[in-house]
Structure formats: structure tokens, C-alpha cells
Length: 255
Length: 328
Image (cartoon, rainbow over all chains, first blue to last red; front, side):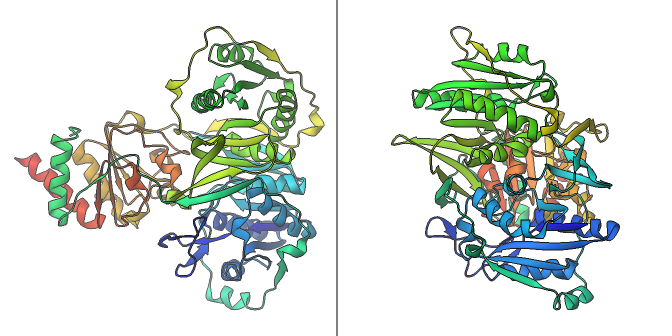
């Protein structure tokens, strides 16, 4: 089974974000990491390969720095990677992202394409579904379990409020993976060493021949204005605890 | 502006979020002096179409087909393309539900259009609609504009608008059947049974007080500390998704878009950053307290009281204070 997994590199969870030029963040001083939802998709790809044999190809788009995340995927067990190089990838709208990824992925003719459910930076949550559309593949989203049954998949899809649904779809197919589907592995030292020999094919995004007129534009990013006035309670932990309970009892009257 | 709302139902029951989006759609139609139509799609949904026609709306489009009995992304996309071709909207609005996430980007793309998803608000300025959505897990927000020609697609997050503000119509709106052509071969996915994993052991929606833990709790060994606080307050223990994903607490303790939606009188968030998916499940709480080491954590946006600090120091101090008052 040939599996393509799309992984995005995003600012680290604890990175202090400073807005630059109004429409993106200052990248200079912050760390980046693999988008957490995508790490579940990668893990699922690796498990499917281990069970059914095949190949896992990690695909990532962005500037040079995303190679670090690609190497992490290779160290965890992906067989090879494709890096779509574009310093301005963060300015693409969801459809522009999907068209670019699709152009690189269709050359691979995969049996299965996986992505996380959304990214922790833009949070568009559209890439997987749009990618399926561009590649002409059937899809299912928010998947919590994957069963391969011959030429089709039987997947468990999460609905809202604790409901699930079984869905069957023919291969080749595209799935977006729900976070928490599995326990993500750590890269081993052996894996890190092996990754050094693995292939990373770099393709410049402009060489993919993608034509795209943006469908939307982010005009401004800013820190949200508070809708609620938060009263911050200060002091030593003991003082703060006492003050908080006092407020909850006599001001909010909820205790 | 010509607006088309796409509603959502399953087995003849509304997904209530679509009434929030209806409230938004009515408001936009009003401000832009536009026309509002809504689609009811499925099989055996005539009664829902009639029900919707009682609201302040210009027309209800009733899309009915045997192949729409169960939701599939292919079936919905193909049918809604035909409804859109008939209605010719400038703006297509949908609630940001799991189902909408599954087909709406594809529907928009199939027409060569884009979608601005998961919006929390809009502004109507100088004749232009600006959509507001969160980024970086709610740490920042973005103003987004559509480019190119309509129709444009946008989805609104659960809780962004109030369903109780939906205006009723002076008279019933016309219900127009929209015949759609679909054949079974076009639908590639096969939806099977819908089920619940296990019976909900705890109904957090009934708890007056919730102590909820997030990533900041760091390890499963630290959960009893929060549990003790919940017990002393006479409340229940809850969690954000990552905690349940890790298996530190069962899934039925989860608050947020994939878990339970609660509105207790007191919600105490311990080490919860306040990602959108969590906040939509608890922002209706009467009083919200957040304890977090990061003063920029988005949870403070919705908190009434905040303590910036180490929960491993503050929670024991709280329990100690509570035990002291209990014993006197």
C-alpha cells in the first residue's frame, strides 16, 4: 500500500507569537514543530504500512525550515519525502494549498492519502477535503479507525456529541485523521540515523505548474479584543486562592 | 445580497447550530437589504421545510431525493450544486459542523470558489463583508475578505450567533421543491450504521460546578489533585480533548466540540489554553475561572476571574482553603 501523508510545520505550541506586517507572525525568534493533528496521520500511515506492507511518503510545503519536520517524519519511519519549497506558502488560501499539494501528490499515484484534521496555525480545516476533490478521490473525515478490506476501506468517522459512523469507501481514497486515533511514537536513535540516508525530493512550488487565483485574502491578523473583562487575581498562591474563593462566594455568588 | 443558508438535519432532526447561522443570515440579509433563502436537504424532510418557512425568510428550497436519505459528501455536493445553480446566491452560509467540514470545501471548490470557514463574526463595512476567524488556536484573530466573483462560501462556528435571536416571519415563506438529478454510481462512499461508543456514564451538562483539566496538568498522576478540588467544591471533573486522547480521563469527561457542551454556574479551567474546540463547549458557563501559567492563553478571553501562575501551587492552596472552611 502506497500512502502519502501530508504534514505541516507550525509554530511550536508554547511559541510567543508576535504579529508582523499585520498579516503573519514574526518567524525569526520562534521554534517550529510538526502540526500535532498531522502527527496522528503520520502515525496511522506508519501503522498501516507495518500491517499491510508498502511505502509511506511524507509531503510538506513551506520554506527551508520545514525540512526539520520532514526529517522527524523520516526518523519516525516514513520511507521518503517530498518537500514543496515555497517561502510564501503561508500566504496561500486553502484551495491554493490543496492545488499545490495535489500537483505533487498525483505524480506518486498513491493508494491512500492522509492528513490531520486541521492545522494549529491557520486552522482552515479544508486541506484534506480539497485535496480529495483535486485528486478525484473519495474521502472521509475525522477518522478514528481504519480497516483495509481488499479494494476498499472501512473507517470509523467521528460525528458530533459522542456519535460515530462506519463508512466504506473504495481505494484509492483520502482520509483526514482525528486527533487521538492512536498513540504517536517517538523517533528512535536508530530511526534518526536511518533518516539521514532517506531521500527528500525538493520541488519548487512554482515548477508544479499550478495556476490559482486566490479566493480569499487575510487582510489583518490581530490579538482578539476581549469580550469579557477578566479580573486577574494576584498574590502568593495562598493569597490568590483565598481571594478567589472570596470572590466566588460573595461577588459571583456561585459557591 | 442574495444569501443562501444550507441547513443540517439527520433522520428528520435539526442540527440546532443551523439556527444560529440562520440568525446570522437574517442579520446579514437585513443589513445588506438582501434576500434570504434556505435549503432543507435530505429524504422525508418536507415537515422541516414547512417548519423553517415560519421564520423570517424569503424562500425555503426543499431538496429531496432517495439518495440523500443518509449523508454522503458526494450526494450532498452534487445535489447542492444544483440547488445553488437555481438559487444563484452571492453568499452561501453554513453552520461549521463536522458534516459541513466534510463537504462544504468540496462544494465550493467544485464551483471554483473558496470558503472562509469557522468564522466567529462578520462586519459589514463600506458595503463590504469582512469575516472574522480565529488563528493559532485562538491566540489571534484574522479579518478575511473574499476575492473574485460570487458565490462565496462561509461557515459560522457554533456559539458565534444566538439561535434565540432568529426572527419569525409575518407570514409563511413559500416552500419550493428543487428537483435534483442523482444516480447511485456517483456516490462513492457507503455510509453504514451510526452508533454511540458507550453509554455516557456521566452527564456533565447537569453538574452545577465543573473543574476541568487541560495539558497543563502534565501527567496522569496529577489528576487526583484536580479531582479532590472538584469534590470539595461539590462538582464534577472534566477535561479538554488532549487529556482524553491520552487516556488520562475517559472520553465522556470531555468538554468541547467533540465532547459535551456545558453551562454550569462555575467552570474552573486548570491548565487549559482555550483552543476554540474547547471554548465552544464551555463559554456559556455563568462564571469562568482560568488558572494558567501563560498570561496570553486564550482561555483568559472568556474568563471572569484569572490567576496567572503555577496550578501545582494554586490548586493545593485552594483545596487547603476549602478544607479549612469546611472544618470550621
